[in-house]
Image 1 (cartoon, rainbow, N blue to C red):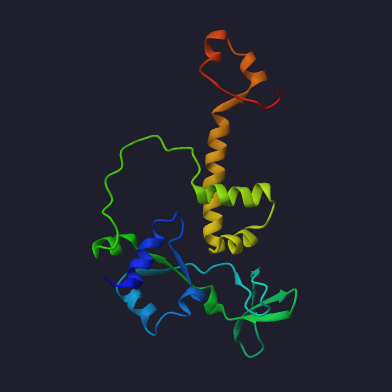
Image 2 (image 1 turned 60 degrees about the horizontal axis):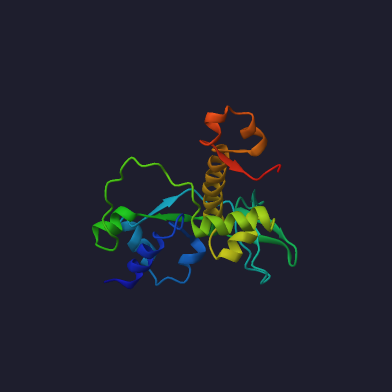
Length: 198
């Protein structure tokens, strides 16, 4: 079994970890990226909005402004708090999506069974809980969360959207005690009552 493909397949077990950034491919063996694209295992998707700064060692997230230089070269320009104005190679914004179907066909992932029409759980996964806590409790930015969680900002954004949607759905199914007391007695027992406003 190709260890490289096995690692890509393993990433698919983590929600929203199916995106490979250009920075990740930098240390891959020569020709590996082209090989995976030709095999249909990786498909290029829209460019990322930003990258991790590699100029100052601070590992902070930066979103470059796209500019055209006087010699008609298109570059990404941004300001690093420690280094100042820097240029970003726009190829660093490229990203690819891992094809679970291709890896499944090659025997690297388990065959998916048909999903039954079941109610989607409103419970948060550990990763969704972590990102929700970082953003809404610790009040750090998505870029900082990406660094702490060792994943791309795009994956943090996807996880956060899912977590917020689940929290919203959970909150819409429960009402506070004051609202429950206004319901007829026969409906009070059918409602999830929260401890808010007690």
